[in-house]
Amino acid sequence: MKKFLAIIFMTAILISGCGAANYERSEILMGTVVTLKAEGKNSQAAVDESFKAVAELEKNILSDVKKIEVAAGNGDFVKISPDVYKILQTAQIFSERTGGAFDVTCGAAVELWNIGTENPRVPTEEEISAVKNFVGFEHLHLQNGAARLDLRGMKINLGGVAKGYGVDLVRKIFAEKKIQNGLIDFGTSTIFAVGKKKIGIKNSRAENELTAIIELENSALSTSGDYEKFFIANNRRYSHIIDPKTCAPAASEISSVSVVVEGSQKNCATVADILSTAAFVLGRDSAEKFLIENKIPAKFIFQ
Image (tube, rainbow, N blue to C red):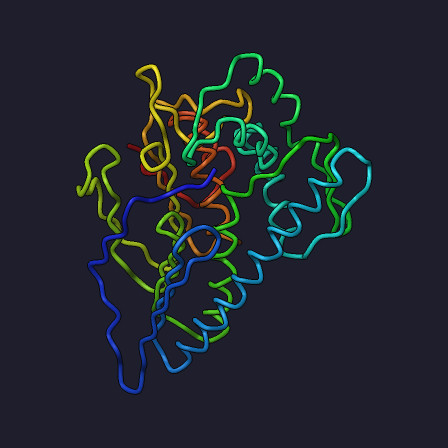
């Protein structure tokens, strides 16, 4: 469930103060271009340390997910890294809260449709029915830093949560280094504005046009939509965002949703990442109802 905010349009720039230094660096990590910008005397140290942490996170995710899937169905709990354990804990909490609209165990369904690769396809009804047996967050168990999947053939997909967790990881390092102005940008799909920034959200149906410009201050923003990764078959657009209940691309009435979560919310970027996926699956009315009922300090921007 990898997600993309088409572009970020920066109308604010980082301006050096007396004795301050700006530092910016980009790398390809976690399947996207990660760009980190920081201002202050510790800017380079903050950015360089952050990239090391994100690289380690990516390594642990790939290793731990593989270990869990290999052991699926044998009844054994697999010890995993603390970061991956925290990712799965948060994912399970929101799977329960959203009634399964968000579910990291949808990996088998994601692979079935193959959207985002060179060979996407529409599976048969029989194939979709069969893969439903291997999707369900109730079959993922966590215990004392270890994880277990009940059924052999189940797969985990962290595309709707890992980048958000990575942003939060960097956010903590920036805070430790006392960075008060900067930008944490994970492929423009999930970001955190350190200080105040103006962010443009692309029109999901008009290339090179913006649908809104919002001011983001010490807050996270994540976007999910059907316009970056999709394919068209039989005059129908199939998005990469899978509805875990149907094991098919979400039949949403919206084309994209951006979620802003205040930095005061614990793990705000992780929450924003999850909510943008869940909101796309739920649709406008159910998503807004979810926010009210759960009293989450967040805002949705629908297209």
